[in-house]
Structures are given as structure tokens and as C-alpha cells.
Image (cartoon, rainbow, N blue to C red; front, side, top):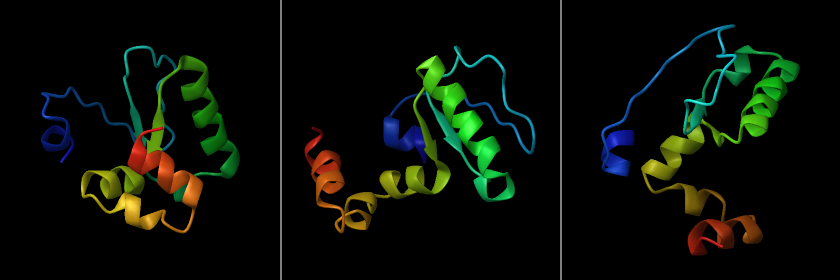
Amino acid sequence: WLAEFTGKRLELSFTSGTEFPEELSSYSLIIHCGGCMLTEREVRYRMKCAADAGIPMTNYGTAIAMIKGILPRSVELFPDLHKTLTEGT
């Protein structure tokens, strides 16, 4: 789905469980799944690592919703977010 959505040949890397790369500079995007299996502290730590490295990070379900075109409808209840998402502002 990612390759189809972007129209690019992607180089993907996968980790699981307690694995999370210490060095993130080679990544363009982090799509994180399994946050429900981690503590809130661990998820926040990973989010901070990504932010500190300037790497965008999103949730797997959110990425799927965007790829499949249902994310704008999903956020209609949040007018500011919906406007940002649909207008790209």
C-alpha cells in the first residue's frame, strides 16, 4: 500500500517488541504499530526520539486510513484538523 500510495520504490525496515533503532537519521518516516503493547512512557520516548531527529512519526492505523482515503472523513469532528488535512495548510 505504501509503495502504491507514494508511487515510489521504498526501502522498508521492520523492528518488533522492545527493538527501536538508536540512530534514526537514515529514516524518512516512522510508522509505528503496537503502541498498545508498550507503556505510555516507552511510546512517548520513541516519539521524542523521532521528533529530536526530525523524523515524522505516525501510527500504523492512521497511515492506513490516509492511504485508503478515509482519514479526512475520520477527522471531520475536529474542524481545524480536518481543514489542515484536506487543504494542506
